[in-house]
Amino acid sequence: MIETLKAWVDGAKRIVFFGGAGVSTESGIPDFRSVDGLYHQQYDYPPEEILSHSFFERNTEYFYDFYRKKMLPLEAQPNVVHYTLARWEQEGKLSAVVTQNIDGLHQKAGSKKVYELHGSVLRNYCQRCGKFFPAEFIRDFPGVPRCECGGVVKPDVVLYEEGLDGETLDGAIRAISQADVLIVGGTSLTVYPAAGLLRYYGGGKLALINRDVTPYDGAAQLVLHEPLGKVFTALGGDAL
Image (tube, rainbow, N blue to C red; front, side, top):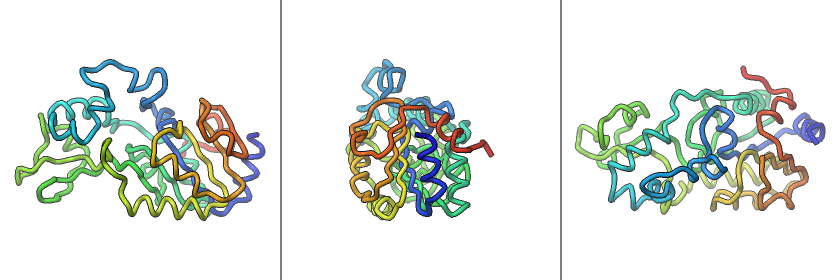
């Protein structure tokens, strides 16, 4: 199966990679839904509730306490998956990365065309005046981070109850619909509307790489229940 995927990659001109938390676990960032993931740990409130818009509004200080501890892996570095995708883009094989991750590691590895469906921890804005702040400002600010104008500085991440950015969504749909090879990796494909983007792919080379079974396994031409790092290393990837 690896050889088939390698042949697809070698002959491709418009690969799109659609990735989830399994891409980042290779860099030591915990995922959400696996047995040892974030959603299976014990907190005062369920993580899904803490990471909702309504909780952010009513319990902002607790939100930031959780966010700083669990959502700001600023020391994490890209892994073989990130670097390989960046190299494919440089070689003219890959047209876009569509990611559910918010850690910015694809850009850190050198990828240019990245559609971040759920935003990024690296972008933060004052809700009152719109001023931009880096992630370190959120990390180092005691309590609720505030701008000089007094407004609360909010991470540019999509919380539960919030909609996806329309421009980002349109770009991702366009890229997927034009792909000659679609590689989906490290995602359970259970979070919507992101998971629904696969239906825009009309080609015949859909590869799913995930440790566990996904609802889309039956629709794929190639399914590998393997760690992403192992697969991308076999594809000739390296940590640049």
